[in-house]
Length: 423
Image (cartoon, rainbow, N blue to C red):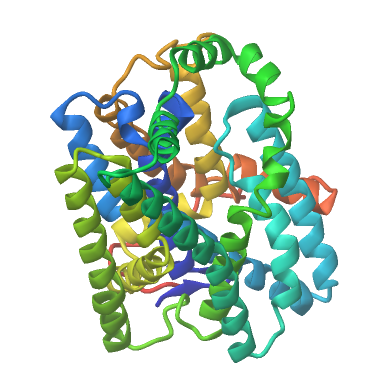
């Protein structure tokens, strides 16, 4: 895998594709009530196009690209600390300064713009992941698998209990209280008219959103997430540290090795996700089918599929070239592209601006995604040929180092010819 003195191509390309993939599912959370993100029939799910877009995202994207982004965060954490130490700096000081600033960005993102922020979680979990950085590889992998198990196993237990209650309610002699419990469970899957109206009020303006996001219990959600999906994030980051140390994420493995990983991990993952999507569509999204299969049973495959995608991307882009450089630029400016996607959503959906919140179906909202992808690909390469960092990367770096970092390049960097080797 080709690199430059200060960049590793594989990490940039994978990160770029991951941040683009994340938008494919995040757009729903920006466009309509939060519950529709987790349970499609709740809102904006009337047409065949809505089902097609859900199925494609469910089979190919959901969970995998977020996992891939988290894995890359662990790898980048390691790279930044190692380079800081090589430069004579104190690794932990550099790392924790970066995480504190990232936490500030994440909280600002959550309270001002969108409930789906992951930066605050990354910052807090990243502070913990650093403590595992120097573990022997076997212990590091064991810690990663333990964290993932702690994250996934309770969901299987809870699902088994709920399905048992549902099955019991279907029996001819089912007790009235059991039937009532199941009715309550099913009704709770859908947002009430009052909840929908309240949600619209909260998105009537940017000010209304800020007011709602800064009130308890919503205000403490970024911190609660560390004990929720933060455990999974920790496991993924530790996998990223291991993937960096073994050379898997840096392109050091043989093409045969990457091909084997892609075929086994991604092939198996896609088959199971396709089956889960098929069952959900066949059952018309009955909660007793949809939730176990698409939210619980496939969850342990998310890291597996993410690793498979990483292997496939490295196979497809082993060297610098026109396409690889475009994706790599998106990855180098991933922080700006992630936050920029939310800014686009804010301008389109909040009542203060475009006012499209709750007006589009799932499929209609997704049609915005290719346009934003094109914007990412167009601006990232152009910008980084002229400037050292993306705008938010520059702000993160400057604030972390408590100094004004140079931004503009002395002269625009020429683009390499397609297929040319890296410097």
